[in-house]
Image: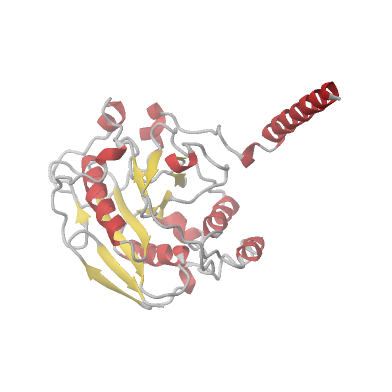
Amino acid sequence: MLCLAVKFGKNISYLIITLAILVGIYFPSRHARHYECVKVDGILRSLHFESSVQNNNLKNCTYENLLSASTNEIRVDDISQQKSISAPSSGGEFIPKDCKPLISSAIIIPYRRREEQLRIFLNFIHHFLQKQKIHYKIYVVDQDNDLPFNRAKLLNIGAKVAMTDGFPCLILHDLDLIPLNYGNIYGCSNIPRHMSCSLDSFRYNLPYLTLFGGAAAILSEQYKRINGMSNLFEGWGGEDDDFYKRLEESNLTPFRFCPSVSSYTMLMHKKNRITSQNRFDLLKRSIDRRYEDGLNALPNNFTKVLEPLFTHIIVTQ
């Protein structure tokens, strides 16, 4: 009887291993440990260089050193340390003084009631972006109500304001994500880029190939072409998958830099457990409604305040 039990146990183990191998072969996107990405030596060639800074008679900024330096990696325990930065202009905009930037990016952050995280993020990200020698402006889009959090609508509002300000590149960025490599240049490419594909909370693995949440870069013209993101996902989940569908339908399937450059850490915070109740139904109809649900269907219920380190966009409904 004992021998039969041992033999049965071995057969079950073999079956489980076989099933795992088959899932890995036939459904690789279920856990995307390996994926195509741009290697370090191809990053500069993949970038879209476009600046809204007028000619200031300075030499162009260069970016090769960000990819060649051996000290590019950032220690997690160094993130919350106070950084020395050059004071940006009112509204959180910065233009390098010693060279002409070839990149102009709007950093758009959906936000609600995370003051300590915002303090850490702003202190770090200004230091990070100034070292990259890019022209940037930080927009914090604040949902000032008790309704379920609507991340996509906040990003749409921030994108609308940033595009009005003339920024050709949009960085859509969750507050709790911190980049860990200076070579992760905060600029756009000719196709959208998923930036946070190597995250410590996922053990630096990509959970699935169509993931496009966290931090992403997209040209303003591309964002307008797909009518931005859906405004209908209230609560957690679904909006980034809907976003990916819009991009794929418009032949803008995103790409990624290699994991060593795209590494991020997540700041600890209490998770939002309120899920988007109808997200699966919305995803089924994603493509059908993309032309009437997005940038062209935004309310005007927001105000803009220029703070010392960021532009505060306050959304009340």
